[in-house]
Length: 157
Image 1 (cartoon, one colour):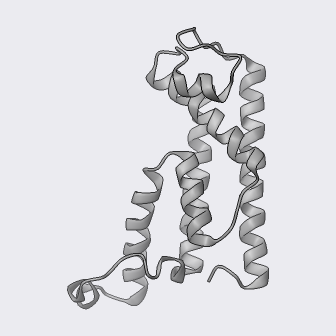
Image 2: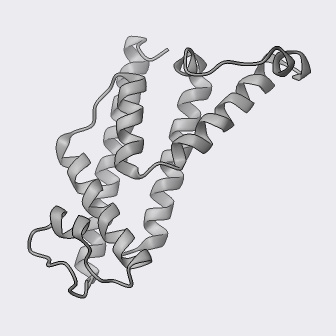
Image 3: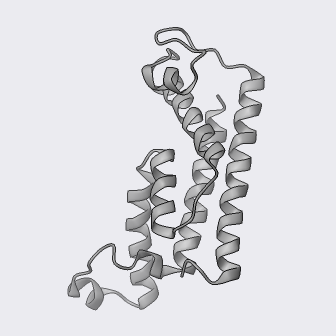
């Protein structure tokens, strides 16, 4: 299903979240505590913030795409369209079946797409890949729009 394209999308998400945290480090406030030692040992405030961002990114990027979106929506008080959320959950289920289940439909994928039956072989056409890429593009565009709107209004800082 275009696994390199999906990896590129995950890379895009990582880059935009990292940029968002750099632009608005206060988005991380109240989530963790720092030890005095961390403050005293750091070279600068910027270095400390970068280490905080890296820790946040490790935790966020470990999540599944739907969980990552939900986490960002809660933390940043923004929401993505239900259609994009639903399509992203389907793409994740397809990707997981292809990569981890030898292209055999599992319960989660069957639940996302009722035309597929648990246990049957999943086949992905070029049209499916094109559709998936378009879903990821629309999703990425919506994420950009949410962040740009927050930047214009001053929210999210």
